[in-house]
Image 1: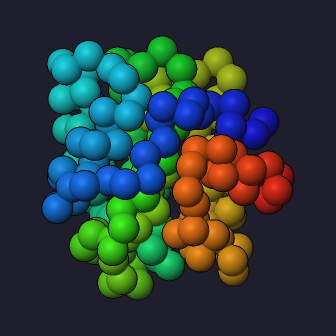
Image 2 (image 1 turned 135 degrees about the vertical axis):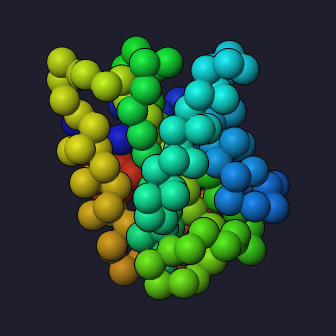
Amino acid sequence: MHLKDFLSPDAIMLGLRGGSKDEILAEMVALLGTDERSAGTLLRILQRRENLGSTGVGRGIAIPHGRSLVVSRLRLAFGYKPGGIEFQAIDSRPVCSLFLIVAPPLEISNQYLPVLGRIAQFAKEPDVPDRLSALKSPDDFFRLLEEKGV
């Protein structure tokens, strides 16, 4: 299993524009290309999850995630916010890099937690935050994932 298997180039945005956590989450959901009603449902699920505790894991990285019937399979999106956004991260630093994970409530392949774990491990690598900030294209992002073996 590799993260690129769940990502398409159009689910990557290197210039997120939102000025608040909710606006950034809405932009991330939009990358999945769902209809307006489904996007609203996903956004509410992610907001509820964030209310339980921030998914900002530190070092400028957040991994918002949730489960919903509006998706039929696990989906990922990646976004980069130049300058960062306040996200109540564990280290209190702004978040620049966001990995969105959404999956149906029940998956036959049960990949949700393993994917979350792989992203968390990837985020812990010393050079990853700087490498993510230097991305110029979705192809650069895919090359980084391949280089790191995730």
